Length: 184
Length: 182
Image 1 (cartoon, rainbow over the protein chains, first blue to last red):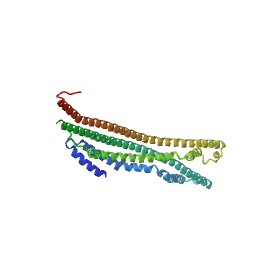
Image 2 (image 1 turned 45 degrees about the horizontal axis):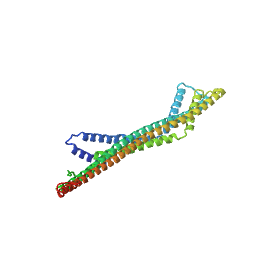
Image 3 (image 1 turned 60 degrees about the vertical axis):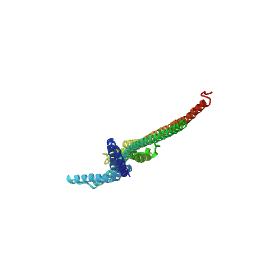
Image 4 (image 1 turned 90 degrees about the horizontal axis):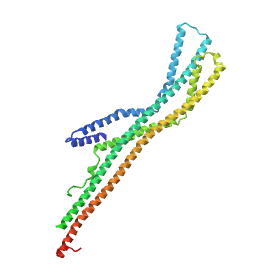
């Protein structure tokens, strides 16, 4: 639809402006291209932003990250024990196991807590960006509609004024003709 | 004199440039509304969530982690009553902090939603104002045109009447031998 409209616009403008220069034609081409670029490049990112406002990916991956961290930490402890040739007593081994379990639980809880906060912060930032973008667009759109309404009103007013002038002129002509007819 | 053709409505229609601008304006305003409304609804929904328990849990877990850090293996320390009292105090504080943080978060979100909504409303109000001005201008223009037209028509009637009057005067002067009686 826009493509067809552009073709028709370009045809009319180039016809009308050949005698007066091509500034409007150039502006028309450039600004339309800019708007098409915006639609092609920016709108998909805005749509992604809408999706991201309800994203849960940080929370979803928190447990896996916590498990990996605990595995790495336990592996390091085990390697240190083996490296230095230490032998743990059964009581020490039991205590170590209990400690590692507690650490796993705490790490997981902590990871979930941080993830919830981080996710919330991210989603809210995205909501604010989206809101500001939307409002700016709405203001811009309303301004354009305002200009269009103003132009429409100006055209309507010019038509009505010209119509009234034309009627007045006709009345004047008829009056003059009648006067001449009566005078002759 | 009277040779000008009547103004044709189709000659006063919007140019393709204007039509395109109107279409882009409508599209932009609608899309902007959709994006802003999505954000406002999202912010309002988040603002109305009761996050007290969530923040209290976070604060309690943070507190317990801080309190148990470094002494988890020390059974004697875990049984220290002084520490238990300190833990309780810290947990109470964390619960209080959690509640406060939840309330502040809700307030911030609500404020953000309201701010965005007000910006939208301001823009809409400016639109109403502009339309009202245009409407008033249009009404004034119509009245002025009607007035001018009435004047012109009256003037046009006066011309033949003037001619008739002039003829009557001429006729009278002929009938009454060149003297016009009052």
